[in-house]
Image (tube, rainbow, N blue to C red):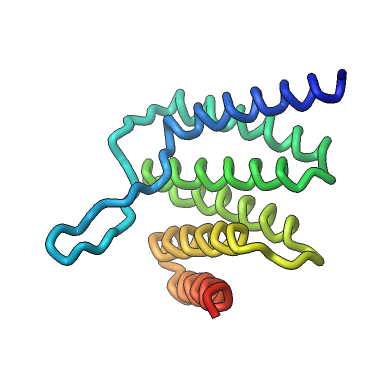
Length: 165
């Protein structure tokens, strides 16, 4: 009974945190390109983010970090923390704070790679890993680190090719 209540509280907390992150960094949405019928995915940038919002998100990240440390054996919580870092990277990118974005993406990438150690990687995790590699590559490009950016983009592409092979 107590374990079920604890799990229910955990789910509620993670859902609340996800809702806050989603407000500031929504996922990309599919858009139809008109006549050719193809879909493209574009990030939504219709939300205004203030420095106070960034401070709130950073404090949420501290919670995720501590929570992930206390639950190192829970792969799901590790993934949630990695996803949170990716979203903070997205927010910093939107604000033009590329050094901070790089730090957040680096942390997300490290957390995803730690989750993958010694395990066969499922499709969704490969996609998430490739997405973070791609995001980090874009930020490195913006910071003038073209070789590193290219290498990350190629790693992301390689991961996706393996997934579809």
